[in-house]
Amino acid sequence: MLHIWLGIAGDWLLFANGFGFFALLTAIYFPIPELAPYQQTVRLGLGAYTLVTIVGYFLLHLGGPFGWVGLGSKVIEIGLLIVLILDWMQQRDLVARKGVSV
Image (cartoon, rainbow, N blue to C red):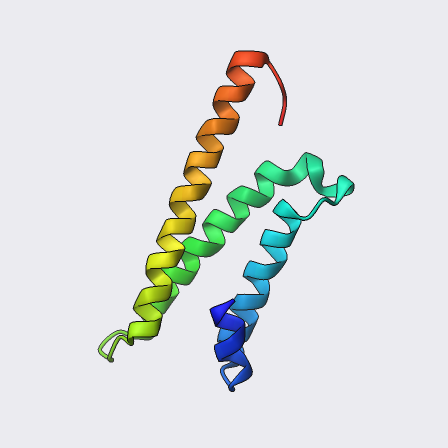
């Protein structure tokens, strides 16, 4: 929730981005029965949102300095993408083996 913390210091774009991450992660991992059928869609949305965040960071900082905090958060976001891909692969294998819809 680094984006929210830095956003409170005055950068509304970071705050909005952090809130978006928080909302999507809550929709995936907080037990809300009404959202259960949409978990895969929300995971896909979180992946797309993460990609947009990474690309947006580099576009906003073209020609400018890249900070250690910004680059560190991009490494974490790439890790999130890897986890989402691995989770998708695991869910796909579960469906293929057991015929269970997730």
